[in-house]
Structure formats: C-alpha cells, structure tokens
Amino acid sequence: MLAAAAVLVALVGCGDIPSLNSESVAKPETPATSGPADVSPQSQLQPGAASSVSVDRIAYIGPYGDLFTVNPDGSGERRLTGVRQVRSRSSDPAGPASPSDTAAFYTVQDLDFSESYAWPTWSPDGTRLAVSRVQITPNRSLEVSVQVIDAVTGVTRTVYENDVPALVADGTPHYLYWSPNSEYLSFLATTRQGMTLFAVNPQTTEGAMALERGAPLYFSWGGNGDSLLVHSRDEVKLLQRPFEPSRALLLANAAGFRAPALSPDGRKWAYSGGDASDSYISVGESDDPAVPRRILDTGALVAFMWSPDGRTLAVADNPDPQGRIFQRIRLVNADGSNLRTLAEEPLIAFYWAPNSERLAWVGVDAEEQVFELKVNLVAEGSGQEGSREVGEASELFRFRPSGEVFTMLSFFDQYAYSHSPWSPDSSQLVMAGSEGPVAERRNGHTPSGSRIYVLDAVGDTPPNEIAQGGVAFWSWN
Image (tube, rainbow, N blue to C red; front, side, top):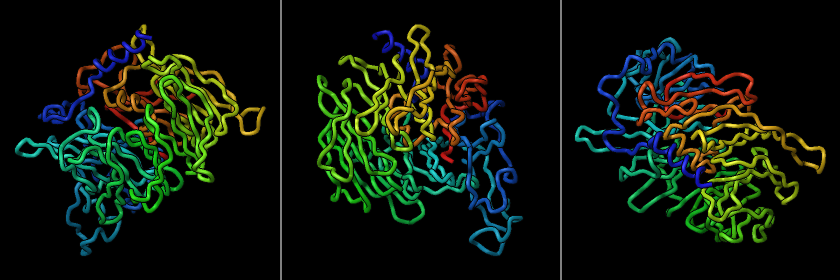
C-alpha cells in the first residue's frame, strides 16, 4: 500500500506539474526546428468553415503552449491559436462575401511566445473549444483569461478575464466544462472572493454569472443543460434553470468525496455519505428528492460516475480507512442491485466509454513505477433485467503521464465529465506522456518530453504516436 502511494509521489516528481510563473509559461525565444509547424490559411479553411462541425478530432497543447487539432491518425494538423481576423477584400465588413474570399478574411500569425494555452475543452457539438490563456504583458505581469475558439477557423472570443492571475490547481488556470447542449460554458476560477463557479453563454454579450463560491467545489451537468449538481464545502445542491443561487435545492450535507454524479437525464444523483468508519453511496431521484436510497457501502476514499446511458454506477474505493489510492472498481445498478467487481488492483482513475460498453482505468505498477491503462468490456448480462456482466481486461499502455495528465488523473471524477480520452465510437483512446518507465524531462515541453498516443481499445495494435504535447482530448462527436 505504501509502495503504491510512493510511486504516485515519484511520478509527480518526474512529471513536475508546472506552476504559472513568468518562467514556466513563457515559450523559448527560438522554437526548436522539431517544434510544431505553421499551417497555411488555405489548409485551415474550408468553404463555409464558420458553420462547419469538427467530428472525430483530437485537441492537444503542443510543446510551446499552442492549441492544435489533429485527426486520430496524426494527419490534418491544424493550429488554432495565432489566428486573427483581418479586413476582408469583400465589401461586406462583417465577413467574406464568398468562399474564395475566406482565406483573405482569416490569416495565421507567427507563433506568439508571450502567451500560452492550457486545458482545451470541446463543446459537445464539436463546433468550439474553450481554453485557458495565460499572457505575459510587456511589464512581465500575467493576464489570465478564458477563450472560446471556433474549431475550424480559430476565431477567438474572450468570455472571461481573471481579476487575479491565480490558479485553481497546479498548472491549471481554470477548470472548463460545457453544458450537454453546448449552450453554456461553466468554469471554475480563482477570484478575489475565492474559488468561484461561473457559467457563460458565449453566443451572447452577457458576462459570466457567478453560481457558487467556496472550496472545495465540484459539479456535474445533467439533462440537456437544464440541471447542475454542485458539491460545495459539505453541501450537495441541485440548481435548475434559471441557474439562480437563491433557488438552489439543498439535497444533503456530505463531505469526504469530490465530484457528485448527476445522471445524463438529470433525474438521479449520487453522492457519498457517512464518515471514515461508515461510508456509503446514496442515490436520490427527482420524483422524490427528500428520500435518498443507500445503495452501496464503500471505503472512505471513494469516487463514482454514471455510465453515459445512466443505467450503471461505477464506484472506485479503498476498503482501508487509511488508504491513499483506490484498490477496486465495482459496478452497481441505481437501486443497489447487481453488484459486481470490475477490477481489484491499485488504480488512480477510470473512464466510461461513450457507448457504456467498456470502462478504462489507470492502474499503478509500484514496482516499475509506471501507470497502466487498461480496458474491460462490460457486457450485457443474461440475468436480472438491465444488468451487465464483466469481461476480461486488456492492458493497452504502460506510461508515465505528463504533469497535466497527472492532474487530470488525480481529479478524474471531475475531469471525466469535461475532457474525454475516448474516441466518439468507443474504439480508441488518447493519452499524453512518456511510453514505458523512461522519465521525461522536467518541464515536459521540450521535443524529448511528452508525446500524444492513440491507443486501440482492444489492444490489437501498438500505441500510435501522433504528436508532441502534454495533454490531449477527443471531440465528443
């Protein structure tokens, strides 16, 4: 147990999660020749690009802090940062008159070494990405903001500017999370009043509205963006449109866990109750919110998430009250029936496949000090109606994560809602890090640092390295 915990500390030391100071966010004065290549405007744009939808693409942050998207096989790389709007040859000042004018309307600037981007987050409809930007001003101060970027043209809009250049976690300016209908961008930011949950509609001119303040603060969306489940301090609250804090419904007083789980249809919620000696999962339903059901006893260290179809709750926990890392994953129905074990080993995170038929997890090999990405098939059962059976696990990838990926894994029960490693068809995954036990360089932003790998979910083909970068996520569609 102690060895498993020690390997996490060792991995953090090798990955070295960066802090946002002027040295760590600044890019080198001269990029290495093996750095990301510039992309011409003509190759970036298609006729009608502003209304195009990006499908089955991977967004990643390159070694110099720029945002790219790429096809799963590594082709079609597109740099989205550094794109600016210029005067069109068209007589219409609002934009190009025809597709032939499009390339004159948008151009790609040279790499800007005074700014860096972090944590790209796809909108569910695939048309936009939200991303944090950290900019170094001429007087060497930092400006931190949230940007929304068109996934094809790279046209950018600033939707929020920090009043203080502070982080929400190591190397993390904001936590970004779109509503299921792509209407709202919710995000956590550090303000003068403390940690704050905001929501903004990027399609309007209205500013971001503060929904909740306090720390720790975790949340999940449900329905079609109509409901929001918040765990703030020791309170579990349900917010429904309109998202007015005064209308929040207090569901429970509960601590000792991180992210609450709101089912995709918004009708069921799960949270952890009790204390270190008696911890359990409770499920409430919108039909009778005052009477939650205790469905599963757990260890004090616990994290959980609904399958995308809302039928099954996956629960990672550790029966040891002093445990510092998860030791098993179990699956259970919403009514507490059909409990079965998916994995029993030291692990740090898990992720449901979009089709709810597979579940990936990241195990810990303490002896070799590497992480192991594994996938298990969760098959339809032949017993109780609506049940699922467990298949055999496949080991896909042994790796050391980048600093950003380690942060994502450490808080996976929150990041899994907003940043998907799974391909839309549930056949592949994407991961950033160093293959095998070989340690990467300290800052993870050199050509010999982290790589982006695409992995076959069945394990039939070896990992495919597609780019250099510290973090990568698949589009939802």
